[in-house]
Length: 235
Figure 1: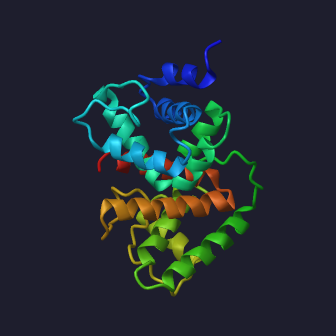
Figure 2: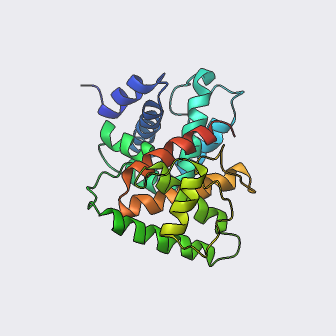
């Protein structure tokens, strides 16, 4: 009977989706574990990131896994950037003996496998307000607070679509005497101004994603993860 990891490896060898690429890396790691060549998951993930960064080569991992073509290097690069951003979560996944498509999709697209306790709108707003006020209390973090609010609006928890409605919502829920650093209050990187480089912006978005994942506002998590994927593909 064909080894389950070898079967997964072969099935996803030329996969073009993010899920296929991540499952390919997972199967590669497990096969190397069987040969005693990859006991350290973090070292393996370091090599994955390095390999995907060089699109001029035909890749192979640790010299053991058969060569695979660079024709899918775009997908490999995108997933390797995701690995860099979510290193601990990816490492935890790779240490499991079995994984499902659902687990991989949940990790890639920002949906928690665990059920979240549904909160009321007011409870979400209170948590977001505390987060934003904390951002505004730290020098250089105001834009982060603006973006937190922008993703709250993007989730449509509060109906505010025009610039006037967005600013009114800010004053109503955050404070009439607190002026946002960017009155547009968009979340999308292409719409909201940013004075940081793309790599730093991705870290900011991942931080916001983590916040919304923690409080259980999954719609915001979905939106942020899509924006991160789009931004990563342009780096």
